[in-house]
Length: 399
Image: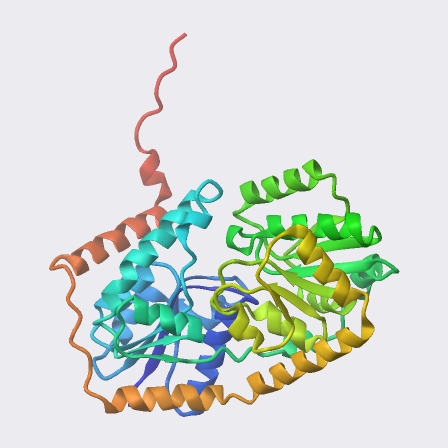
């Protein structure tokens, strides 16, 4: 029996890739395939659903199909590349590394290496799938000969629960709430949100606040620059909320008067359609995959002049009839999205791959598996015998 497994660097809780990975597993198991998720790391809340990527070697077989989620170069990626299984690449895009130079050098290097490594998969994959048309076009530009779109069809069940009323009460008042949901990361251009809000607050509505909802762990330097910008502009009522629970997220969507997005690089941007679903008018910068994700709904802007965007914000917030028309259009876009047959599309690609002649066997360095074994031995020493690195005598301190 052919098995279809997934491999990726990390399985996150509550993020778009994590939701898609779990949806793929449900579809495959529902069709009768044995399917596991192999990762380097996982959120502690999802670890029970995953297996260590090194175990993939024992589950590998030339007849199997491996769905490899590529967003950054990783040990899991290189291991998946070297196995004899058929492969479909699922591409979530790689943020250009220049966004992270100066704020997160490690991530800048990872993005650079990811862009460099992904080209090697062009001849390795039987099919390369972008989770948006923007990502498919990126794959084509990178030299992949066989591409298609496996559309993101987000689940909204996590937004159907009861809101955290205590949190809602903190911000549910006569003030206007401008909301952004997403990681506090440089390509999201949070600094532009602050400039837009400053112009709106000063020119149109002093009884307003900006709520930035999303994790900022690992980006403390970027967060510090944002708080410095808010202080320099003397703009009050900018709240960095951090990572939230589903109940808290529901509360923020329910008290929001406008969802504002300034991001310059998105492979899809799930929070946009979450805001659609929760009937929050959306105003977003027309970059990368954002226009296709919004599918003709909401309001797009191309000019980042703060006064221009502030005027658009006021036009939406102050006009109830316009808000109603926007929400009607956004709900129609959600209906079109949910009408897409994600499971059927996925299984159709699986049938197409399994029926076609397979791509050539991967070519790897002659000592790849020796390096793999050595790296595993070192990792085991680090985990299980940490004292081995403390075996040298302490250096004598002389006065």
